[in-house]
Amino acid sequence: MIVPRFGDPAEARGAFVTFEGGEGAGKSTQIARLAATLRARSGRGVCVTREPGGSPRAEEIRTALLDGVAKPYGPFAEALLFSAARIDHLDRLIRPALRRGETVLCDRFVDSTRAYQGAAGGLDPAVVAALERVVVGPTRPDLTLILDLAPEAGLARAAARGAGQGAGQGAGQGADRFEAESLDFHTRLREAFLAIARAEPERCAVIDAGRDPDSVEAAIRETVAARLPDLLPGEGSRGDAA
Image 1: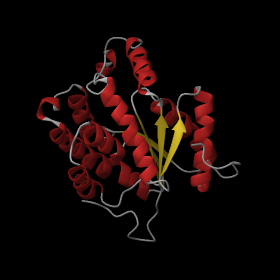
Image 2 (image 1 turned 90 degrees about the vertical axis):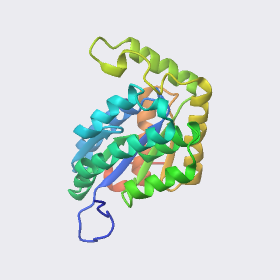
Image 3 (image 1 turned 135 degrees about the horizontal axis):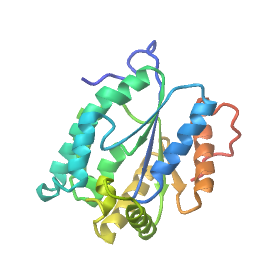
Image 4 (image 1 turned 180 degrees about the vertical axis):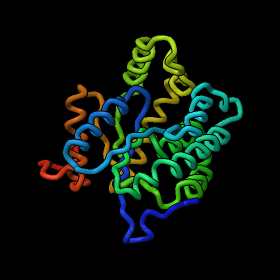
């Protein structure tokens, strides 16, 4: 059941921040850093999660997706599986956390479906939008940070990350279903994320992920302070870091 976030003004409401970008952009690292900062500074609970995944059932679907189980059936089948995982994730984790007034930091959300299965995968945008309306409803991010990186650099990072992980790491042992796509696919992916940012500038901010991690972290903190000042009270900002 979809629970409106904005339907009851008396209902406690947290902040919903999503991180998007291509492979190897450093989302996991930066989410962990922002979570630590918010826990120390905001006085709110902070929930860190990811898609696909974030709840037990959704994590099972994640394993299948990254193993490429749905790929032979095309982008629509993949989008349906992502939607099934998202329904469980929203119902069991994201919406309850927001109702408790927590800040939710999510590694990927609807924009990844738009970019991966839609723009890069060739699925009709109208189909993607219809799935989004049904599955997500009004539970939209307050801020989306798009970590932008040249696909060649991102894939090199992802390959190095996979090579550095030992046995028992699942998809981390090698290129997963999406990392293994062609450079052309990842170029379309980057263009899709930048197009989303241009279309929704009030929600999205583009962060240059080609810099060192400390500089990226500083840019993210500056953007969060400017866009959602209640999360980082007293943080001086000079505007967005896009």
